[in-house]
Amino acid sequence: MSPDASTSLPVLFADDALAVVCKPAGLMVHDSALARGETDFAADRLREQFGRPIFLVHRLDRATSGCLLLAFDRETASALGKTLMSHEVEKDYWAICRGWPAESAFTVDHPLDGGPGKPLKKEAITDFEVLATCELPMPSSGFETSRYAWLRASPRTGRFRQIRRHLKHSFHHLIGDSSHGDGHHNRNFRMLGIHRMLLHARRLAFTHPHTGARIEAIAPPDAQFQKALDLFGVDVPSPRSRGEGAEGG
Image 1 (cartoon, rainbow, N blue to C red):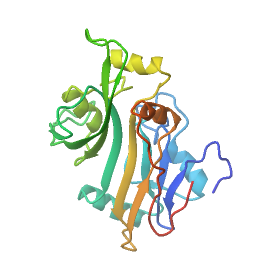
Image 2 (image 1 turned 135 degrees about the vertical axis):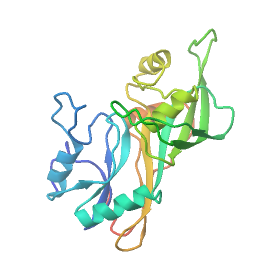
Image 3 (image 1 turned 120 degrees about the horizontal axis):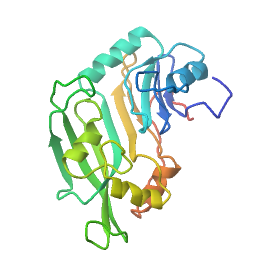
Image 4 (image 1 turned 30 degrees about the vertical axis):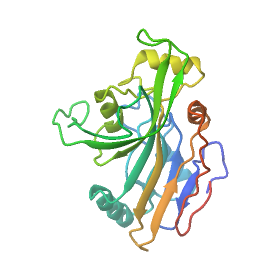
């Protein structure tokens, strides 16, 4: 691997066939029409880091941090892609939203289109669980305080910006989301020194396509996300990824 620690991505799991890395918030996964002159991409960094071709199995939004799955050959990429399409990959995200959901666990079942230029709506389902709540002394909508919730989001489908759009649909806008969020609450968090979108791909679990081993990768939050979590007064345990051939990063 490249010795340049400034551009290397933390490795949560790796063997000869595949790897799970932790993508930082703000880094685009690959070049696309949305790049707008950007020249720094996770895919390029990873090719340099591992010194071999890489095949991205899924994507993360630029502003989202956390677990990113990749393969080192087409056969493994194809096998993982089929596993992903059959919903056999467990994906858990951490999100911080405005308001307190009425229930400790809820599901949003709301069809979504495929994004710009893709108007056809398809089934989209996300399960949410409230992990903690907090109330901050910041005025909001005529109240003297503002309420926020820390959620676990588990998408059953993989639509364009699904979690972000489902939170908007349920009136629990994701904090820091400039496209689908709430500007007032985004400003509240910027005043607290938190300047990122608060969506983090915390956990990825799946069966290794070649060995049959159960792989579980868990990505630690970055300093900005941790600063937001500290508002809830809950200790976050240090993660340990599990699986044969796991490497720390």
